[in-house]
Image 1 (tube, rainbow, N blue to C red):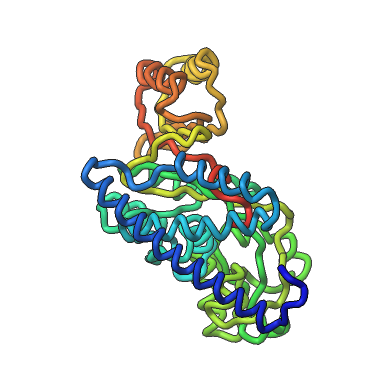
Image 2 (tube, one colour):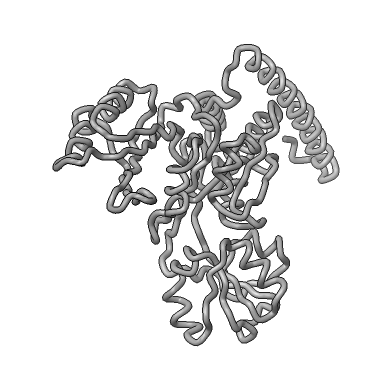
Length: 365
């Protein structure tokens, strides 16, 4: 650009560029709607994760680092998600109220364009997805510090839904209250997981202040907004949503705290070439039953990413196992492994195959 140009002239050029970008965005969303209609005619799934991955890879390669890669990915994530949702508006159920960490994870995954529906429990999220009242649900399944979220695992044993994706959300806990003064706090409220993740900080800094376990961080923030003597452990989104003040930022006991969330829907997407498959199994009542399962996975060269047991309600000392395997059900070794597991196990359910977290999303997108 000519260095002799004045600031007003450069700003006029920026305005022209912005108008051109807007025109292209309008053309892009029109094309996306046309593709949606064509997919309806062929009963193809609206979401093609492999196609989206190809778009990101091509754009980042073409960019060659000139525009910041993370910002570019974030911008196109919002554009692509908005265009995809224009084909059919998505309603996403989550553990409410507004501004919970689950809500934050939903926005990270689906962008700002989706319609979000706050529900009172994880069980209710599963129920709404199964009944088809919402297109998607998002639920926490495990935390890097505190482990599995058992209410989510138990809900898979009750409801017929499929896992469509996953997202990892770095968790930073903030102590908040109405005034922003720690002296005003007489009770600290939050969900059981954040209370556990901050227990050492609370013990050291607020040793005489009782804690109150509530059903969500958003609910705790709401309580803090309505009662000047209640402090809450809540997300950064809650601060803006409920007009409360930060007392102390980052009170989690361990840095690098991350929660994994699952996207629930009616069916899983096609392969992205970098996927995970989740199954629910029951073991035969015989010695070496678990060894038999692990042998099947080893023989098929399947990488087991997670195994977690949960008791079967109403059946004393009986358990089901949740397995996460690396690969997609369309992959030959996974398909063969599943066939063998069905023969080896007393119970088998495929919960879904879906892109690995960060396959389509960067940490900051």
